[in-house]
Image (cartoon, rainbow, N blue to C red; front, side, top):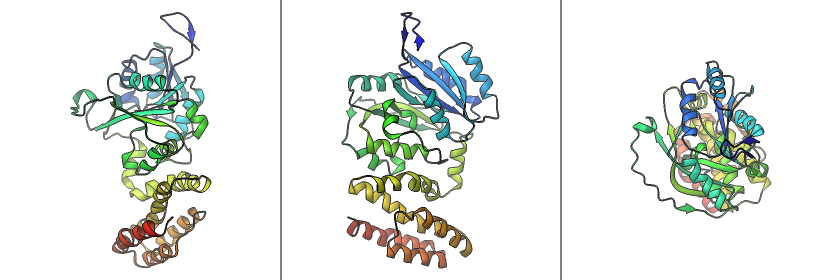
Length: 340
């Protein structure tokens, strides 16, 4: 509970804002200002320090001294998933919002999302538009106009669409009811990369999610980005997405009745990623070791005979052209005519 400074009455927190921090000192003050400028009536701001080596904690502590809505916790287990989950455990709000310290919000972003969930109690979550920029918000020119049109597709629509991770909005473009996490769980701490994508695919499969056509998030791309972003640059896309696939999407497919479209989205990645990862791995012995690991990972799903053949040929040859032939012709045919 918190005392509302206007009414002097104790009320529940309306929005819990959770911000994982890892060496975020240059951005903390601006993140705090961005949230305060949203003019949310009642909120709490939860910073979760994730083993920062800079003066992030000192900066947050100084903000706490001026604003009792700000709280600081520490999460020793490294990773955005663990940090977000730790913040969620402490959250008191009916609504939950995850923010990244180096991003910014457009004017009236949170109130716009909040109004949608307050008006329609059947909605679990709502998200708006993400704008990516190499500059700060005040320097970014955006031609996209806000129509405020609300779209509520059928169940599963977003989950199937977001299997293409390139279509995913940024995590801070979403506002959730607290009950969402009782329904689908939290972020998977096993995942150091792709934990946000895995969570949102499950959200899109299990929950009623609306889209509000309004600019919400400015995703700021900069040189001192997160460890996760740096890791992604060093890896082929398939290596990055493999862990969410085996720890989240394949188990979900096997444990639930899902639309055929979702099944195909999972299978085309499962059967396509293995030959691709093998084709970009240097050395016959290294490809053999990788094959052993990947087949163990995917064992619950099984491997089609045709895929096994191309896996073997790729190990022997290391040919990327062979993979391209398999992906563009063989796998597409298999998915179109064999998978039912």
